[in-house]
Image 1 (tube, chains in turn red, blue):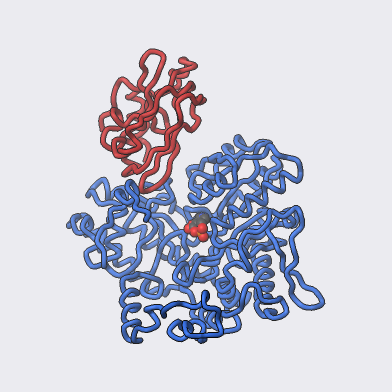
Image 2 (tube, rainbow over the protein chains, first blue to last red):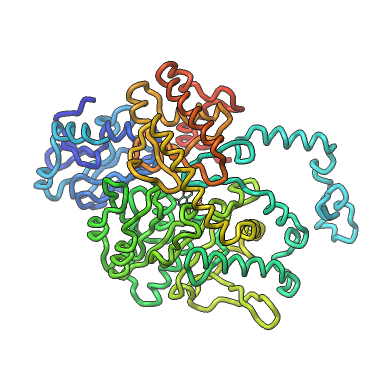
Length: 128
Length: 464
Ligand SMILES: Cc1ncc(COP(=O)(O)O)c(C=O)c1O
């Protein structure tokens, strides 16, 4: 399973792609494989502020409803409106078009607490 | 059946006012009996049910529902009792309800029982509302958090949200039990309730329950017992004695009433004395004239169901307890746990049981993860293949702690031969997964419907 090098990861299987002051957030291929077919994504409204590791969205698959925890603190500036009509995008392209929210970071030092691709690879290998 | 139910005749009853009479009889009342019987028999043959096969659907306790309950519920005096008949005319009905309340209180170790809720989830909502009211009356209104273990049934967090409370998830430890340090870290003066089922959804007894109860009470919170797994401990240990303040019992599980077909289920709740005034009313009390309905006080959360609740189902549970007696109730849990352990030991030789190192209670969870990795055959494929053999499938993908979960609960009402047959079938299917994976991908082929497209149904629901 290839894990993009340029992202940071959480133990709850979210990723964040940093872009200056903001970060794009989604869930990993590992999470998607666990969940199975995603049928609905419940996303927040732009403007909402979140603390690191607080629930920011919930996703529903045929197996379960799961929370998505925000890897960083900040304010939601954009959500992926395409997921409402096409939730399967998360299955098809979890690291690309399947992104969920964009957050403006309020504390960039939190990044240091997240995992690199190599660390995450190792973390999921031992996660059965 | 009375004249009034036969629309072929009742539409001509001239003593009824015109606007209450049918213009024409229902089609069902003018069809020949043979057509009607064939229609219903053929419909029933499309179904797999406890009357047709073994039904090891974990967490659901699909025990056989004895027909004695149906017979009693079909007695005219019960069947035709009207919800608003004067109390004096339905003393038999009220006596059944009063005795059932007393039985459930005794079996759960609670002080007061409320029979209104129509299902387990409805009971959860009712009890959480009562808990909220309890804290409101104590002017302790900051308690809005409900702690729920990560392997809880989905109704627990859903009921908490419906009651306007916030869900806080508590981790499980590597032994598959509540992680005490994590629980401790999450308890605070915001804690309203910890919801727990014991044995838990992995089929393991929460051996730390007394410490858990002590910690929750020390933090000022209440303990809620999700009675979905009561079958494992019936007559042996009581939620009330473990420290729980509230409980629901699913009469369609432990108390053997039908899960469907016979109408909705029933999920009575029980509470300790301090919560009793918050229960929905009216209450059944005993006066010099017999059993009477008494309005609830101002501390009650109000009504939760019309009339008596799902009376005929409550009635069937009452019959079941009469058939069992005290001794029988204890034999239920003994045989349920014995059957599950027998099956666990056998299935372990076929599929991994990740938390199966020790004894289970009334159910256990196997994993198809290695089969999926090696042969591309999932828990769902296995479940569908089982259906083709005319047996119902285990619960799949729950609890989420086990990947590719197959949750198996035999219940106490199955013979050893039935369990052996299931084991042989599982062995065959797992061998088939390696040799002919497509047979599993294609299953079911011998049922009235093939694979239903659950994904499309969920993504594009057609609700009308
Ligand atoms: C552990 C657990 N809790 C709660 C419930 C909810 O009960 P009900 O289906 O009666 O609403 C279930 C039902 O399957 C369950 O298994």
